[in-house]
Length: 152
Image 1 (cartoon, rainbow, N blue to C red):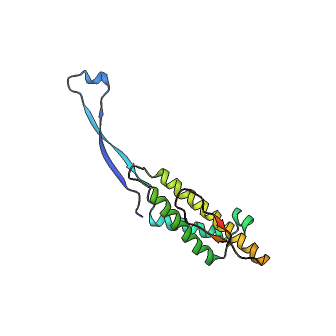
Image 2: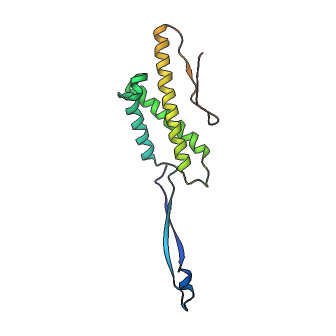
Image 3: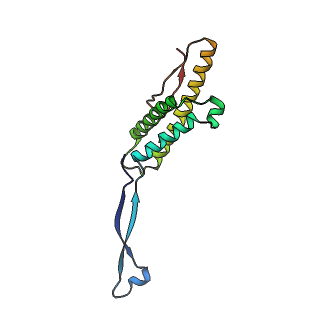
């Protein structure tokens, strides 16, 4: 939950092989920059939540198919979706990663959980109209499996 870290590492560049034959080979120092994009800063996570709220509660491609979610419900759902996706991705992260794969996993989890949320809500709306019980949504996963909707 910090800004991406930027570290400078001094490296030595050697002259070309032809220059090494000279009496005084020169070596110059340059700096290579590396940075990590995982974990995202709190500001980035807040922006993700804000965008999720907009997507869930405003007309969008998703709402055309599954309906819009009231703003208050969208806010709660967005926070839960982001937190669960972050926890899932963070559990998969290792010190060797540059963060790109984990960030992609985080993004995929957000997409899956968002879709699962709107599908479950649409299913509960349709079952409420038909008078049957609403499905129970399991949003936690132990492995890289998609959460499922289970009838209760």
